[in-house]
Amino acid sequence: MSWLKSMMEKEPPEPENPIGIVVIGTLDPDVHLTPKEMVRKSLTKAQFKCYDVGKKAPAADFASKAKEVNADIIAVSINTAPAKNNIPALMSAIEAAGLKGKVTIMIGGAAVDEDDAKEIGALFGETREEAVALAKKALGK
Image (cartoon, rainbow, N blue to C red; front, side, top):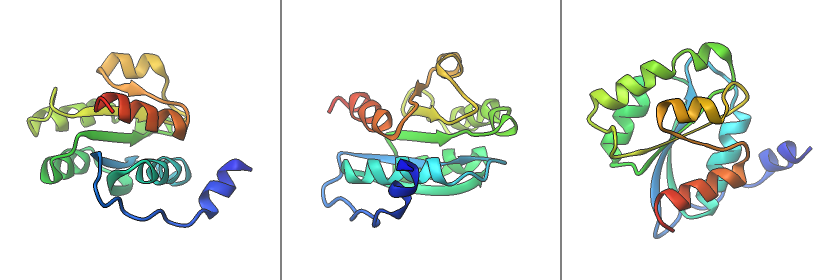
């Protein structure tokens, strides 16, 4: 029921002095919004500015938005096997945008684990609390 409670929470206010910029979304063709929304709200509460590319976001959308807003972190929710199969496309889009090594990649969701994250050089979190801790650690906060 904690997921329901978190979805009922009011939208947190935008941070006045953000500690970092995060592009967040659910990788295509995944349509699961709840996990992404829980993490987005938690990151916003923790004073991160979040740009949401939404659900079923194509890999290129993550990279182009991250480049546009000079993101520190790309946070990707991956809850289905077909979305997991799009991880290589995501990494290619990030590399093509010139962001490899310049932006931290964080993944989480029901279809991925620590090994998947290690394989692509990303951080992995299982909970929204872990996502906040990882984001802060990535920025040295």
